[in-house]
Image (cartoon, rainbow, N blue to C red; front, side):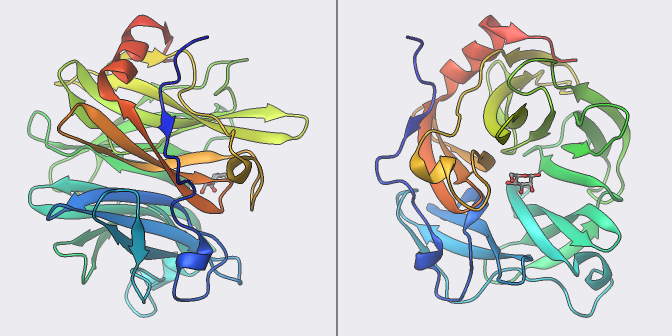
Length: 311
Ligand code: BMA
């Protein structure tokens, strides 16, 4: 049997709606980062309107989280942002970049879904920066440093013609983005054949940027969401050095197989540790938050030694 690349935390699920001090229906698809030695988790929750908000939970060890008493981000009511967030804010990713924590999130409205960029210095207050895509885009991750003088992001536009794929774009100032190109596509009759999207913000390794993404496969009983790994070249992340041929995580635990949306593992965050491991966080069945660990080198080796085509 092949080695499991992600080891599930024994105490999963690590956060559920019962742990949240205000009424929510789900706790899932959370971005996670370290701030002053503590783990900060921004999680998505469905309300009983069917629309989503973002909450904050904190932890000393990365596994035992305590939620704050109030939500962290709810749709804007007044500013320019209000029109594009009216249907909810979803799936936050956090990138520590130049002494600030940047949050990319999906903003839903009658005009479609687009990516909002927000920023916090202290996880007390949060400031909207800009919308950094038009509709329809989701799954935006920022690289944690400038590359060749520019900021870099991956995201996933929607398309009727091509399967939904991962694109890269560049910016001089985090607000204006361009030089976009497609870097990775689903592969037919493969576990990620229907659509793919960036998951956790890329992690720097000696051999390249490690990107953990989700891939979707259609079955007679609905779609299955799994996680895989890809490696981007350090000084030119538009070049993919390898995409792991096999998934690294699939729905297996009862709370991943059954829930709000069955058969889903979906990540928005992973935290690299000094010992060469990472903590990976994923939503189970769009209902609860789960965690696990992986050895970074093993994920990198999967991308390099057991690779499928990128495009
Ligand atoms: C995607 C998004 C995610 C969700 C996933 C599985 O299209 O809506 O937020 O986790 O589907 O339902």
